[in-house]
Amino acid sequence: MESQLLRSKLERHKHWIRTSAGTRLDLCREDMRSAELPDALLIGARLNGADFRKANLNHADMSGADLTNVDLRGANLDGAMFCATMLAGVRLREAHLKDARLEQADLEECDFRGAQLTGANLTVAQLSRANFCKVDLSHANLRGANLSGADLQGAMLNGADLRFANLRGANLKNASIDDETDLRAAKLDARGHRAISAGRANL
Image (cartoon, rainbow, N blue to C red; front, side, top):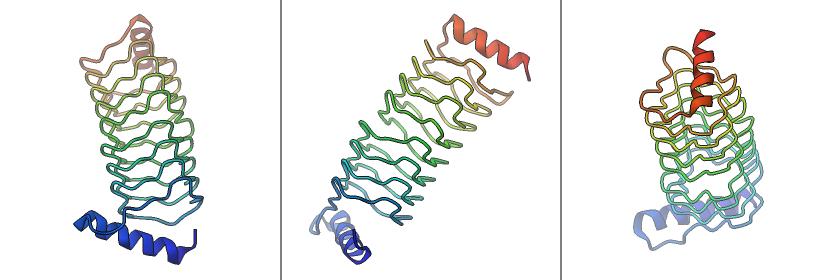
């Protein structure tokens, strides 16, 4: 999409956010690869099926937007906000999600391999069967998240908050934990307990 047209659409969308009288942004199935959209206000936007690979969405606000089947592989989403965002089928491999806000997000079976999630907020997120193999989740907030059946093999969980998280059936083999990893009241099965004990033994 031409930059001038995109700027015009974004301005009309800002007016829609403030007054509901403008035009809601619709980028459904658009090719937005490598687009420069830092700090963009995309609240409530229709983005389903769009291709945002390697786009710069640093600190963008996508609260309430429809990101169904959006391709965000390799995108810069550091500090981005996804509150009440529709994320079914979203692709996030190798995405940068440092300090991103994904509270209560539904990301079941999502493939996060190669992604950076340091300091991300994933409280009460639905992450069952998600693939976090070797993903950096250092200091991430996963309190109350559903990680049942998730692949956390080799994941970096140093300083992560996993209080009340459901880790039943999760693969925690070779996961990196430290004294700041908080697992109080986390739900673990026997395999999980063994993996955590082995990790603590290596501290």
